[in-house]
Image (tube, rainbow, N blue to C red; front, side):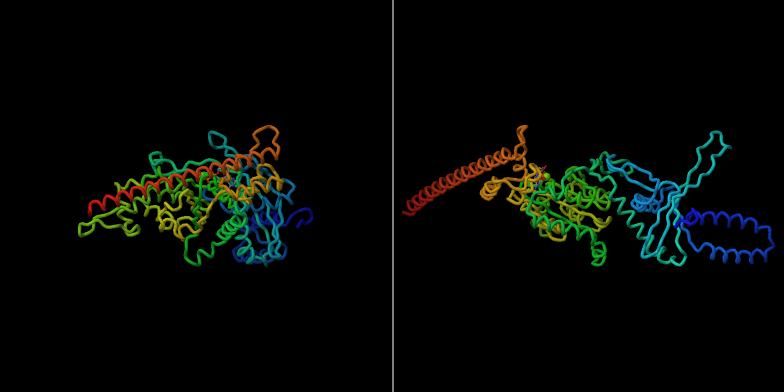
Length: 498
Ligand SMILES: Nc1ncnc2c1ncn2[C@@H]1O[C@H](COP(=O)(O)OP(=O)(O)OP(=O)(O)O)[C@@H](O)[C@H]1O
Ligand SMILES: [Mg+2]
């Protein structure tokens, strides 16, 4: 690439300068001679400099150019190894650096056997001296790409799209992810903008630290990977690119932790939708439209959020004047209007998940969590809406091993066998197991922590046994009383008949 101490790109820009001077001089020649000289200089230039150049400016139409930003990210990764001068910027909550090419530095790239040269240039416009206040020099940065003219098709066709895709993917990787929550309706701006508050999303949960059956965990990871790669597939089958997960199970089994692990795995933002503060279906739609792609929309404890099932059971007066049972989907409009239009209804929520509006942004995941799956309306969680139902259950031995690794950094211990047996005999949530594994003294001895857990499991087993005994006793007493009363009723009946 370097030619007599000067790069092709540099040489190109010098030749471009010379051509400009030459074109200015030509103005003074007669018309016929000018046409002839034009052709000649083009031919000569083709022989001396067979390269084509493309420039991409940082700002176009007053806005930062998206293509420039993508190139910056793409070249950042390459320039770390090649360039002598790099520029460092902070990202990710000031915890890491992103490197990019500095001014006049050059990077060589190769694509399908084609060599290309990138250089970052800067044109400086002198400050104006006519105005009252002397303005600062106007710097305009741009990237210049040079390549042999025979490769024009490859560069214009495939290479530039490749750079854009790679650059955008890197930007996504380096960006700061956010956790959003919906603002109450009365604090939405007068333009109806800014519907969500956000903070930086920094939950440390990962699939590695999530305690659950490893086979089930792998299934979920595979499903997420397949989803991320299915852009074309969803387009082909004519479906919006989104997926729904229902996480159900007792408290403390890791539903919220799973959401954080999913977000970290996919590098998505999280929108935590507090349904009780949404005024009506129309506001719900607005909130949905205001979410970005590559995000997870979460509604926690969906069974407690709204009386959705109650709405479904609402009765209406039929034509005959008698009360009839409403079909939930037929009743959509009526429900939308119901209660002065001031509540989110089941049909509103169904529309939110898979109505026409749900396709307003690609690559989105919707997650519901609940402690009581059986309380939910089947229409809400049918496959297609909630594509995967994931049960988060009480801690079993495999899940315990993950927690032991997380909390105590051990893979095995003689007490593991006892813990495994006790976990089969009693139900304890991963949250409670984790709590018992946390060292209570400064010693942090593994054996002490495991003994604490064994003790807690034995206690839980004993409590469960005595509760079951009490229940059985109550049932026995009730059965005896029932038998007694039945006998009495029988006697009375016989007496009456006599
Ligand atoms: N499966 C798990 N793997 C790792 N940690 C877990 C798991 N389950 C629970 N925990 C720990 O217990 C805490 C509570 O778990 P989490 O909030 O995810 O439970 P949940 O199922 O969402 O409970 P709830 O139904 O009450 O909302 C977490 O902070 C985490 O430290
Ligand atoms: Mg939770």
